[in-house]
Length: 397
Ligand code: AMP
Ligand code: MG
Image (cartoon, rainbow, N blue to C red; front, side, top):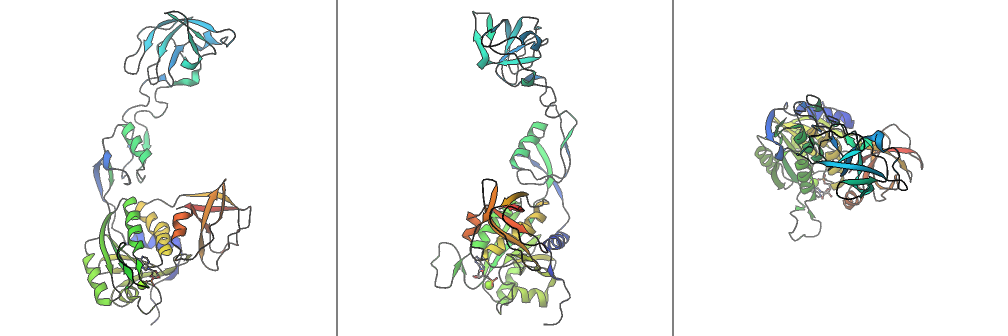
């Protein structure tokens, strides 16, 4: 092979940037909120209303004047006259004066004059028109108007991923439709003579296509449309046909056929007849990934090893497709985690009691480890090994 004219052994960070550079620029579309989960907002969303829309009660109980109720205790319950009730949607229209209260329910408007709530658990009925309080009414159980957000306030920002709680928030802001990034259309292809569909009978040496199913699920989670191209044998002609079938996609994601083996034809095809943006990422698992182009089609070649393929997807491809960096946090190491020369290590770890320990079997073929581990423990390139008791960065699986 002649000297490569493309970068080799790129960092995880550069791999993401190079993939992002090959993808088409974002296009916005408007979708109904009911189909918005997993999509990326393309504009800021300002609240169309305040929440709460009025000052209201956070509890079921009575609304009273805090200063009147200071003395209330189990030994000396305070007697208040009940003027009426305030319900969500049906406010009490009078005014609460000294020694008076109004029955109130969660979300009901606080009547004029009242500034505090005593919960129903602290009340005793005292005839038809009075209650007794066993403790003082509290202002903290009043929700002020706009205490959550005020009309006009920007609450969700462009670029935000619409997770279920954010879908709820967009609804609360008053949006039935939201502007989101058009879904990327991602073609998906597995390579390998030995690869079979789950459910088929396996001959010795064959393997079920786990990568394609895991990656398709991951792509759906990223809000992409998946064009499933199935799997293709290790033959340059078959591969070239599959590459042609991916035409029109924004990206082709492949697994297998990009390492150093004699039958790694995808690597050869891209090297000889396509373009290569990089080959190999300084990470483990996942080293031999490749990014290139076939005609105008960006091709990200994931390694065939099941763990490598899903880890590179999660740490390099997913952050680009979603525009969100991986979610990390810091935990105390309960076992040591080695460093690797010139590579960032992502060790599978198990979390319990605020600590993370080594999952154990770290081979790239041990797929069950990804199902059983909780996190990937990051030991960045150039750092020394992590000792017991030290803090480490972890990425949720
Ligand atoms: P390769 O990168 O093509 O050399 O494949 C490396 C290893 O991953 C081999 O053991 C393959 O059998 C396995 N492998 C390749 N593709 C898949 C797949 N789609 N699902 C599960 N294992 C695979
Ligand atoms: Mg292969």
